[in-house]
Image 1: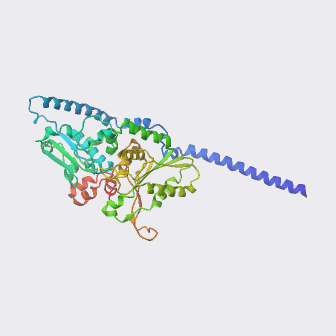
Image 2: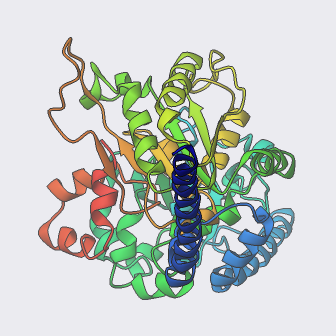
Image 3: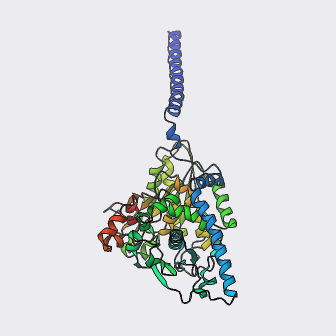
Length: 456
């Protein structure tokens, strides 16, 4: 009887071992089958494990036409300036020989999210109209960015004292009908010596739809990638700052990288969102959603926040929510900035260099989670060639009413953007106030809803 029981247990044990072996080999087979049959799945989320330099080189080849145009522009600009200096030193009157120009005046009291779009717009206009490009009032540009040509308006402004000016953009006064369906090379526009662009907005979006210029633009910069392509040339970080960005990425980024821009103080500055809040847990829930299906990956979550307290609260929240994510390795990183310091000019938290580093690191993330209404995050989304290969635009977390209840959702609190471009704050104004023809042409841009709805 004892021998029979022993043999019975041996059989059971043998059966269990045999079953485990079958399951083990089945799992190997299924993994191999999926790997061979569905190879696209493994490429859906690309990695930045390859060097940033190699990735940028690959993307530059796609926009070789613009790169060649930019190099030629540098030569043209430098030659024109040299000739201007020679004329000024001679006794010859130069008022009639002055080259026509586009002058951008960024609002220096705002952050980079409001400076960059206008600068990009101005350079686009200079390409379209074959004018020289200058920036007015950005005296410390060279502290942060490489400078391929002298575009400081202060150097030549005195020569244009008696010149005629046409203001394409002047904060809330904009020539949207002209930009959307007029001709910037017409005799009337060409009669002005200076085309002025004073804006904190990505106000040149309508030019992408303009029948007079659309073909020219798309041949130089296809697929509506204007902001990314121009900013990679015109707004390149200085080598020492860029080195800090690349070192951080190489030391911290994994196979899949999520960037979160947490802007808690912004809501009180926007009329529509005063008195509203964004619960920290909403950012955590977006992270949980993004991690679904990400198996056997080294994941990095990069956080850029406007207060030390909100950053700490978000880290704690993510740590708690990651208990269910055990199939890979997740680490949370950030640049150790003291957000209690204030920029003396625009009163934004942190320093200008720390803001640029945070923004540039965000730009290299695979997916972005942004705070509604903050141009910082929107500009970061488009400020690297990485944005050209993202499969989707950033996720935008919306504010909601601050009630004593458990934050009952009375509207959508999360949506996904259709593009990695900056939004257009005045897009809503254009839709409501411009004439019907202008609106119709503007809406031929397939991303028009992104530009209009992305901003408050």
